[in-house]
Image (cartoon, rainbow over all chains, first blue to last red; front, top):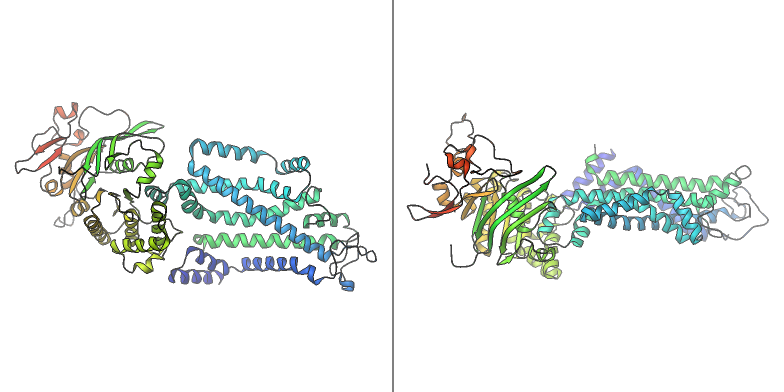
Length: 298
Length: 330
């Protein structure tokens, strides 16, 4: 049923003379799991920004009367309060903003660096390629957390450092993907044709190669966003990431685990948000992969 | 032959590839020229060096290739020219049409955008100006309804239509020289004829010189003023198209022409072939004529001495270049 609808949408698109991207968008829209993922993300994002407006509480205000109470409608502590009497509802929303921002911004940075680096290495080739990719290999060999922990201890704890550190590691895979795709694209006649028409190298890379290799990158980066969120959560869990009074899902989960016996909701609620986001991004990634590669359509 | 200087003058061009198993000499001293508005067909079997000759002229060689000799476009030396200079010449003074129109266009850009892009980066044309000229060239290569096709992606066009677009991209800057590498091989026969007609019309209208590479003698007969037959990296015969078809002088040319299937062949007739295999282009070359092992008329001299490409005057006054020890067509 879903596949049929996708085929129809794609067929209709090509009849109207529309682009490959439109056809892909049609197939994506027909994928229920992916659309559910989009819906979840929209809801979580909306929650992140609307919650503070709805709730009467501030994320840093302590309600000394009600410390670590379970979720209740009383006093509008819908998600309960933590060990310091702070309202979890607004804190989860604040954590969502930080976690999503880290996920998206870091992924964007990683994609930009990775795509350009990989495309240049693949297109130029030869010794340049060898040197550039050996650098990637060396960086790859460094354990991720080891590298981040060193960065954080040397430069102090800072939210931008977290962006930077995760992004600096995650672009490596993208560079490898893009380099491989570029090597293949370089052999195609349309790149040769562009060269035969005197197009300069930068133009060929940006106009003829990159747009043709972004498909796998888009898929990979939707799967990268949850990875980054998870890494940040882990760093925060270790106490190396986001710092009080700022919060993130990772930090909330970390604090929640400490009170697991007495106040399980402190762990369960932020962890559920994190898990839902992971699922959503993974569904979207899968949907994009299917949509961008119509050959898989059975 | 005429007084006007040639658009393209190739002298002793050679192409050598360094491979893991030693060097391969794909092109071994090729010389020809193409005058303004004239067309030359380069004919030969696979591996005869005809395509490599063209890529060497365009400067589109992989890193393991060494190009020797000289190729001058409107007097300017192309062999050894800088990358930047070649970029400036490619597209503007010389264009290349590829074999497979299915793959020679960038898939994610509309054909209009691809045409406009060329105008933008070579001549800095504004978008309205670029669009006007792109539509003009599309009309010139006989694309019907260019306004609509302008917005289409390559995958939405038929093979023949795409090849016209490829021709349009090579011609949009009005180059002096157009090189076409087997431009009709990937098309079926009826489309082939139409695309060839388009070539002819464009060449006549714009005065562009044409080098047409093909293994199909029928294509040459329909589209070229002159033909050069290549064998094992060398030109073995060069003549006006009519003369070559009427009275081929080199035994290889004769054999090629004899291999063409004819409509009046009996239906069960086997296709004729030339016995043997073309020689390997790897390693050192033998001393004799490359075709001698397969030639029915080979004599002792053919195996020991390589014949030079010499001009011959026939009894009817026509001239041609032939590389063969045999004086007259046997």
